View (cartoon, rainbow, N blue to C red):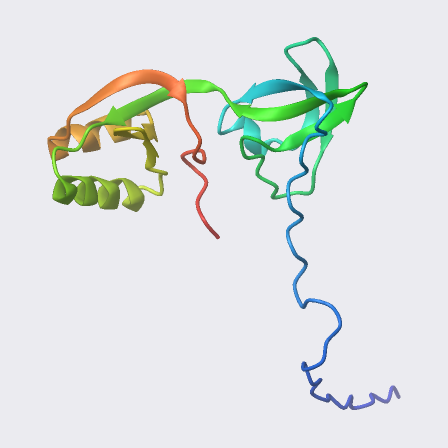
Length: 163
């Protein structure tokens, strides 16, 4: 016969902790002030692929091994070697450049684009969203003024949204 012991659960008091309950996201590294900076262009999808080999524009091979879930935002240092800092840059991608005619129209478009879980990023006097057929259909149905362009996109990919 097997005897089971009843475990006593006690509540832990959380005041006076010396460490944070949740790990803090490390701040992106700053490039060394004396290092030469090489920008590595990456699309929104590429900035999610954090375990891979990558060829930098100067021909250097970079081995990426960031923690799962890391999003490499433009400006993030990938690594430094031989006095050179490799920094993430937003690569040109197919985007819809939306030019709302009023604040009300901008709010309506942003709400509709957000319902598709897409980033609607301000870029000067226009808003950018990654282009695909559903976005084109949505913007056309809303009567929004937009053009299809190739520009650097600083938002997240279309399938990625906040947890």
